[in-house]
Image (tube, rainbow, N blue to C red; front, side, top):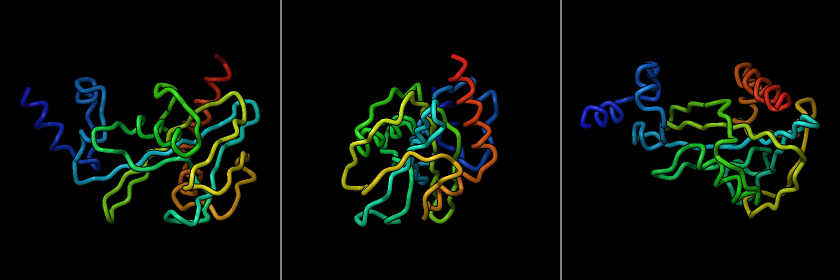
Length: 178
């Protein structure tokens, strides 16, 4: 359907998507939206029993070195944001997850250059020990009250976002009831 293709490629990330569009095209991938916009994805892993989060410390070989962040990275062409999140989690920590277990809790929009970072929550049943690659030097499981310093600026913004906190609490509560 040519109309659908035209509609998809003329959307802007800064425009609200109408409900009718979402119902018509329920699966939205990174490449379905403006090709000029780059995307990244990260995984906030939470141990439901201790309410601790996994953070990794960036190595000297990556941008923003020696800051604490989430496992994550760029969304490849043709890849969904959630697929990228699962792939980056595996690459950076050795931890496998199913895409359907990832819950989008936050999107950070950067405008120069245009970039969107998606943060997905993954609820775990234990504090898994990651197998770090060259991009990270260390890891820590921490509570929200004991966050290490310095945090990566994007991670700090996510932790300070009220809507992300509400979504995360809702997901944790739902998982605990199941």
